[in-house]
Each structure stands twice: as C-alpha cells, then as structure tokens.
Amino acid sequence: MSESYKSGFVNIFGAPNAGKSTLLNLMLGERLVAISPKVQTTRHRILGILSEPGYQIVFSDTPGIIEPKYKLHQKMMMQVKSALEDADVAILMHDITRPIEEFDMIAAPLKLKVPAIILLNKTDTVKDKSTIPAIVKQYEEQYKGWTVLPVSAKKQTNTDKILPLVLQLLPEGMPFYPDDSISDRNERFFVAEMVREQIYALYDEEIPYHSAVLIQAFEEKTTLTVIKADIIVSRETQKMILLGKGGSMIKQLGINARKAIEEFLQRKVHLELFVKVRPKWRDNENYLREYGYN
Ligand SMILES: Nc1nc2c(ncn2[C@@H]2O[C@H](COP(=O)(O)OP(=O)(O)OP(=O)(O)O)[C@@H](O)[C@H]2O)c(=O)[nH]1
Ligand SMILES: [Mg+2]
Image (tube, rainbow, N blue to C red; front, side):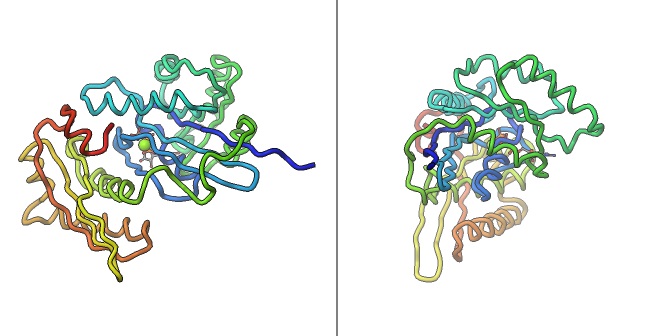
C-alpha cells in the first residue's frame, strides 16, 4: 500500500538565543541561517525547506520573542506573528537551564491552536544529567498534549527523535515548493546575513544591534562573483569601531565574510564593504524598508 504524501509548515518559536537557528540548520543539514551567541541574531522569518520522498517540511526560523523597543523590533515581532498564522506544527524551543516561568511567558501569549513540540535545548550544559527527567515531567504536566523532548541541537543529542515527531504531526497535502528549493530567500539575502553573522562574531557590545547590511551589487563574472555591501550603523563612533585602527577590523570582517560566502556560493568571491552612518535607522520606517525589514 502506498503511503500518502505529507507537507506542512513547521514553525520554530522561542526566546532569543534558545537555539532556533541552530535547529533549522541541523534539520536541513546545511549552514543556511545565521547563528551567534548574542541575542537577537535572527531578524526575519526565514523558510528552510526539507523535501524528501513522501514529505515536504517547510520549517520557519523566527526572531526570538522580545518586548519591542524599536520599530525594528516591532517588525521582527510581525515576522513571528506571520509564522503563527500559518503554522501546521509549532516547535517551541527553550534553554533547559532557564526557568519554566520564562517559557510560560513566551508560550502563553502565542495562543497556539496547532500541535506543538517543546524542545528543551542545550542539555549538554546541564551539569547533573539526572535532573533532566524531572524537568521534562514538569513541562509535560503543565503542557498536556504537547510532546516534550530534551535535546542538544549543538551536540546533536536526542535530535534524531525530532524528525519522526514532526512527521507524525504533519498533515497530508501537496508540496508547497519545488523539491529543489531550500528557502524562500535568495542568494543576496543569505550573503547579507553572512556579513551580519560575522559582525556578530567579531564585534562586542552594541555594534551588532546597530548594524544592518545592504547588498548594493551582486555581479556574476566569469571566474568570480563581485559583491558590494553597505554596512549601516547608527553613529559615527560605531563606524570608527567597525573600521578599527587603520581599517584593520573591517579588513578582518571582509576576510571572514568572504570565506563564509565562498563556501555558500561555491564560487570565488570579491567582497567590498562600505560603512555608512544612518542615525536612528532602527526607528526609521523608510530605512527599515530599504534594508529589507518589512
Ligand atoms: N551549549 C549549547 N549551545 C547551543 C545549543 N544550541 C544552540 N547553542 C548556541 O546558542 C547560541 C544561540 O543559538 P542560535 O541558534 O543563534 O539561537 P536563536 O534561538 O536562533 O537566537 P535568536 O536568533 O537571537 O533569537 C549560539 O551560540 C549556539 O551555538 C546547544 O544545544 N548547546
Ligand atoms: Mg536565530
């Protein structure tokens, strides 16, 4: 007897830094979306599409849920809202070492009407592993009907259980995307994200939170791809920090970002970065739109 085809939207929600983007990359087996130890790395809803014989899962990575302080944050939470609206299955991620009350504060306002899987992530950081079953039980009792799974997305502990769980909950249906597409976003988007990821990795303090990356040119030449990108910051002082002494920091940023982009595009890349100051861009509707935050 032939099995029916399954397809649906599996949207990942949680607090900043829970490991949502790490999970998306793990499920796709590809370094698609940006990850960093700093909070608020993801600013968009980003689809990651997994097509296999018999099913297509359209995962959505979403920004960590926060109380908005800027228009940028409001846009980020709009992205979360859109993911709430079309989810067939929700994955709620939470750092297992954080209190359950924090999870409640995130989960309750979502008012989920779809089946959910709670992933208690970062079990590798739990010193006394024997405490894990009791924590899981606490969530199971509070969230009856939802499956609770302790995992480490980073160390890939227990993560082989995620896909079967998702497939159990996935509705029957036709595929939404061609089976060779991996995302709804184009190469330019991911290239900008890679520059941003390297900014998160290289700079401390407020720099990453004040930075946006705008691809100005993306030209495929015969032997390489020429990419020109603007890095937008809010203040002149941030520009100085980005550049570093004698341009040393931006040079390093360029090298790191180029390596990541070359790996992604599987092509040689020539990358030029320009730093521009746009005061208060995070609260400016026009700038936000220009930088792709809709
Ligand atoms: N120790 C440990 N670290 C993890 C695990 N999963 C993710 N991380 C780390 O946690 C940090 C945040 O991971 P992300 O995947 O960027 O988290 P996110 O939920 O997408 O964060 P935002 O986009 O800011 O909301 C990164 O430094 C990851 O390497 C895990 O299982 N164990
Ligand atoms: Mg993320």
